[in-house]
Image (cartoon, rainbow, N blue to C red; front, top):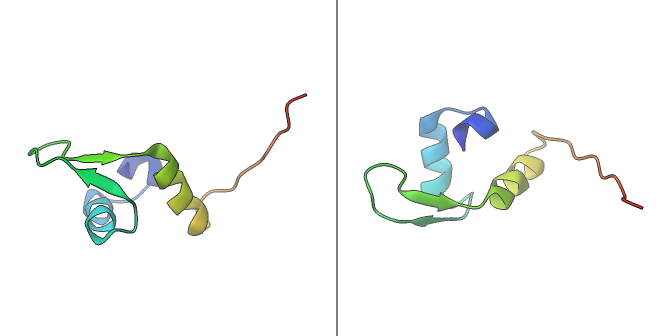
Length: 58
């Protein structure tokens, strides 16, 4: 997630623990969060970090 958002690992962990990005805590030492890509993209859009171009398919 942190690579997609261009943020630090610490900031990514903070966003997950504080609830800004919905996730499921699994409890393992590594890869302990399940995160939907759509939730991450929604956060990026809400923070104006990404622009969306919608192309209609015909």
